[in-house]
Image 1 (cartoon, helix red, strand yellow):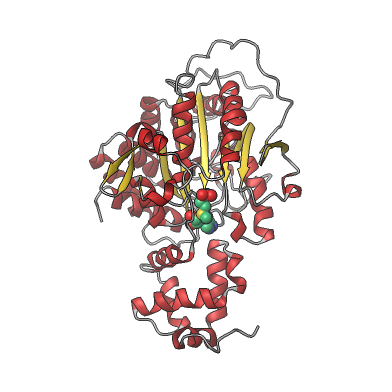
Image 2 (cartoon, rainbow, N blue to C red):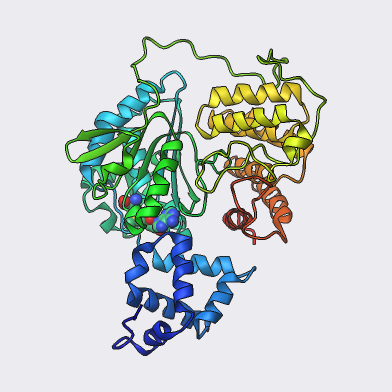
Length: 492
Ligand SMILES: C[S@@+](CC[C@H](N)C(=O)[O-])C[C@H]1O[C@@H](n2cnc3c(N)ncnc32)[C@H](O)[C@@H]1O
């Protein structure tokens, strides 16, 4: 392809003529999904030229070496992504979609979840945070009484670490409120200098985490990306290729609970892609609902079942999976393909199947599938059954802990995580999640210790390999997440 190097500033022209430019460009598009840059060479080369000048690298081959460098590569890719991504966003962007959220989606989801009393919402590609905070404001102001005491999670994710830091801060310039009334802003924000700080009551259910839609497979309970009632992904996929978008839509669907809703940007109405959803049109908005079985509004709520015990008595297993001698498991229960589809039966990636016994391996796969699809009670029961049969199964405790966490059951969550670590100290994920748990509880010393344990276990492992054999999360992603949390805790 001939590139428009003539007329460009010298550094940009030199980049466009560099023989390794196309390799660099392909790596960037492959990492971020931003196919948008395919025909924007002068923009891409300008950004690259600035980055390379800043770190004193003169050609694309040298810059590629830096990006591939074990120690500095990830940080440099983050710095580059911070320049490449476009974070245009503001509060209550596209009013018609927020009207649909208030008038249809939230009332429906709240009604559907009234017995389990929890709500999980994901803003994917949240930029600096106005989208998830708008949802939190709406929930608190319009539905506060109906969901008082519920376990509510509004998760914002993005690939841009700088945006995420600003989102966590929750402080905005006037421009972020361009369509919000002054009275609503005054009710939800406090003026700090010439900026506005979101008030704590609209922040407490909102959290932010790094997630690359292209490279971080989902659904993944271990990555906290599963079992949502509502997913909002607006003005993100417009930068991706058609093939990428086609591969993402089923992942969004799988990350929703049955009956859950997907809201895409109003300018992304290619409804053919969403054929597996029920399409609902409201004035000015097109919404997609995952419907696995006909949804009927329930009769008056049945009583909430009591929490399942951590270790239940040995269950009667239909089909006669034999109870077996307890074994410690060093490997997770299943391997998922990169886009989240379950492999029918993991082969070489899962020697634990042989080591731990096919019965438990299958049951762990079932438990994890249930958890990944947000069927928490069934997942809990499945884990409890495994624990009863194999009380030394670290993975069963880990997934049980994840389910406790989703159900807002703090004490048993911590207990199950510690049990998983006690049973097998080599598993990275339990250390990492214990770190997250302790950080939430403001135990920064304990959190730092757990993150350091995870960091030590990751040391020397290749970025691309799974964090634990068969696991979906790659070492590089986990390393980055751990480093970010240590930084947030004030550590190195
Ligand atoms: C234009 S903003 C949209 C913000 C918000 N959703 C809205 O509509 O107001 C697009 C966001 O997508 C993020 N993004 C781009 N590629 C991504 C990827 N591969 N994974 C996750 N987020 C990505 C960008 O960093 C940016 O913050």
